[in-house]
Length: 348
Image 1 (cartoon, helix red, strand yellow):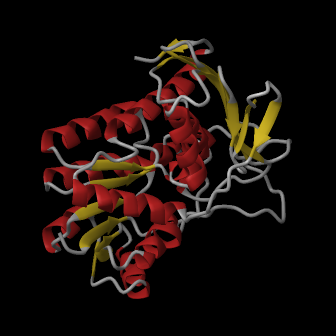
Image 2 (cartoon, rainbow, N blue to C red; image 1 turned 45 degrees about the horizontal axis):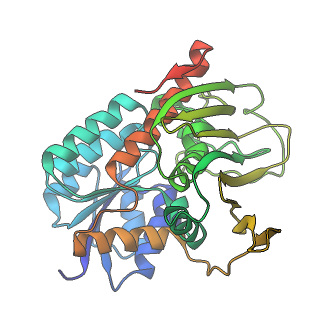
C-alpha cells in the first residue's frame, strides 16, 4: 500500500487547526486529496490553503467524485452518523472525531453500518495518544499499579464557552460533557483498563455559561453567529463499573472556580497522575515514593492519525476502536439521562 489518500469531511476549526496540519506533517504517509463541507466556499478555501486537489459540498459528492482510501470525519457531532454511514456504505475506512455522535441512538446506527460494511474504524480520541497516557497504560496493563479501583478526572474551564454550534444541542448533543468532558472521561476510562460501565449518577447546570466576561479566549466554530444556548455549562458525575471500580468526573465551560484539567487513577499497588506523569507507590524498603518517568512530548493529532494509517497498512486493531466509541457514548448518555431524571441510572 502506497501513500494513503484521504477524503476529509468538514472544513471547520478542528479540521483546519488540527487534522489538516497533522496530515501536512505526515505527508510521507498520507495525502488529503479531497475535502467537503456544507459551505462549499469554505471547502474551496481550505483546499487552496492546504493544497487539496478537490472540494465538494457533501460527503456523498466527495465519495462519488474522488478516489480515497479513507475518510476523516470532522463535522459537528450531530452530522457524524450520516457521514460515517455514507463512508461505510462506500467501503471506506473511517477516522471519526470525538464524540462518536450526538446521542447513543445515532452512535448505534453508526456501529451497525460499520459492522455491516466490515470497514476499519477508529475514534479520534486525541487525549489517548500523547506519550504519558500511552506509557501509563503499559504500566497498568503490566499490573504495576495492581487493580485499578478508583479514578477521578476533570476538564474545567473557568470561562471557556465556545462560540457557534457547540451551544446548540440540536447540532452538538450537549455542552461541556460531550465537548470536553469526553476527553477526560475517555482517557481515564482507557487507563482504568476499559471496564464495563453499569451505573451513573450525575448533575448538570446551565447558569453562567452565556457570560459577557471580557478578555477570555474561546474556541470558535467557523460559523459562530448563533443565539442558541440550550446546553449545560457544567456537570459532575460518578460512574460505576462492573468490576467494582468507580470514576468521579467534572467538567465545565463556565464556573466560578479555578480552571483545571487532570486524571488520577488509584490501584492496589500504586497510583498515578498525568501532566506530568507521576507514579505514587512504595519502594523495596517500604517507603512511599513519587516517581516521574521521562516522557517525550508528541503532537497528539499527528500520533493518532499516524497510528490509524499504520493500522490500515498492517491490519492491527486501532487503539480507540468502534466498541470504545460506543462505551463512551453510553457513559455520556447516562450522564444526561441521570441529570434529567434526577436519579442514578443503569447503563445497558
